[in-house]
Image 1 (cartoon, chains in turn blue, orange):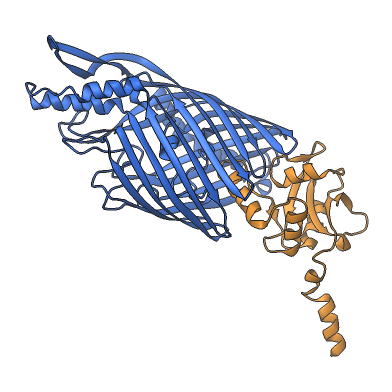
Image 2: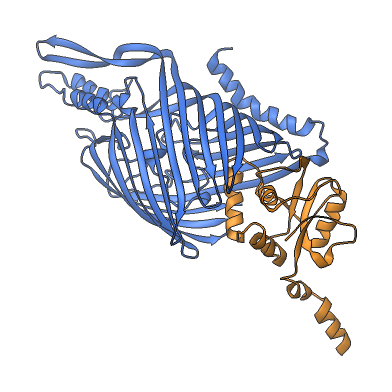
Length: 426
Length: 137
């Protein structure tokens, strides 16, 4: 059984195994405490631009960017053993037109002592402060977690094992999480003139196998939380991945970039780091800030970037207004590469070759953008809230969050986005 | 009739509000030992599952119950919104579910007397003789 078939087997069989375990473990059916819950977001977003931003947002408006429906079952066999399964329905991660139901997580947990928690199964990476609960809009006040930071990780899910060790020092609980596992990830690309295997513009998805490991240290009190993590992903495809985009000289000073026939590598090692904090300061003001950095040495080296944001919020009864500023930028080397390929348009070339240069530039996948946002949440009930937000994104050299129009690019754009959502749990 | 009305006033549904500020104690199954405030707070926040290395199962009263509000305020130093929000996040990061809720102090007393490791809070005036008081403020 090869790796891909093995992973598919795990995806379909693991929940069945988990359910069987829940029903047949020698704890007795009456000892199993089963707790059902659900969550959802009905979110509408519209921009003032005709092109797509973040896959779905344009001036026609969409429900696809933020809407999700999920359910979770928690099993408690006793104080040491438990299990959880969470599923969600949301836009597909490998199609711009379909919705899909997926298992967010399905794991068994064992707590042999108060300070040790071991979980095995499908889990979510403890990356940023809200990575684990990012699908549950009712658990945070922003309309949308800053994409500049929350899109950095190559994957947020994995099938593997996680071990958490906790210590209590005064009012803070310190937890060290260690995890390792594997996952399948789909990375979306957008070609403004042509796609990987199609002569017309549009999106396509590349499937990658990812093995990831990491260490995360979290300090949590009642009002404040701090987190730092180091991670590494090993990314591969069955036929290898393009490592370097080749340049083919045709004449002195004339040549073309050949992304499809670049040097292939068996795997790409991707280190990434994250740090963040959310603190309550005098005046009941909350400051939240996070930073993440990732390095990718493949044809898509524009994915080598940093992202950060600073948010300020304050609660006034049921209202929680906020503002935030977020920014992400690729490495100068990848931005230089993008500009070189994107600018390599020659009137002597046939149109297909010039379009091929644009494809190469798009595959570099660079980012250079910032977003300013102002919004508020209003808590209707303990389990539901409404959120509204206006944000403005400015791109610099380029942004791969933008599906650039044919004949153009994503440089120097200003995108206003209005978002409204209803978030609930039950 | 007047005596009946007075009796109902003193011992009827209003009796809970009359005792809203009465001392609250934590009682536990006979197998449990006394504990401290910090450990109790961690137990009700799901951060520990034992007291003095004995498996412990905390029980709550439902939201809105005056005794629960008193417990959250005096013991956990949180209000209902903060406590619910805390458990909402904890549930959806896969770290457990909130303590089971029972409808009345009487049910808590019954649970504590029969379920090994059970812990709950009741008014001091309702604690049966011989109960294991594991924390009192």
